[in-house]
Amino acid sequence: MADIVPFPRTPREPEPLWRHLVGAELRRRRHELGGTLTETADAAGVSPQYLSEMERGLKEPSSEMIAAVAGALDLTLLELTSAVAGALSPAAAEPARQPGAFALAA
Image 1 (cartoon, one colour):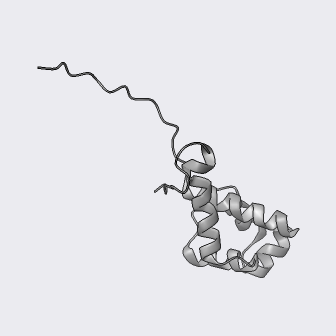
Image 2 (cartoon, rainbow, N blue to C red; image 1 turned 30 degrees about the vertical axis):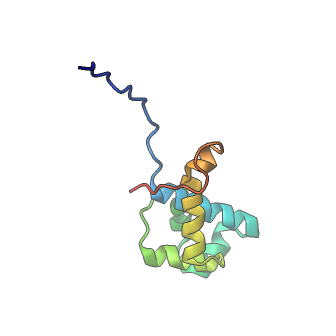
């Protein structure tokens, strides 16, 4: 019989929270468009403080809030979700690995 060889486990970095990635993408888009917190918050119908907390990943916004801010930034939910999924892609973190693969954090 063969010996059982233990499989070495390598510690993994914890996956980022969805709210952090969504917030980072909203901020990136706002900066790309040259908008201020106040202008974008007014267009979305939220307070600048709330938008700031969303962008920093401190709030767990409802789907309605995400849709309102995305709309104010001329982003569809599909575009926002695709950008966030791209940030989670192992191909984005390690280009030599499996291109096109992605994972979603819960």
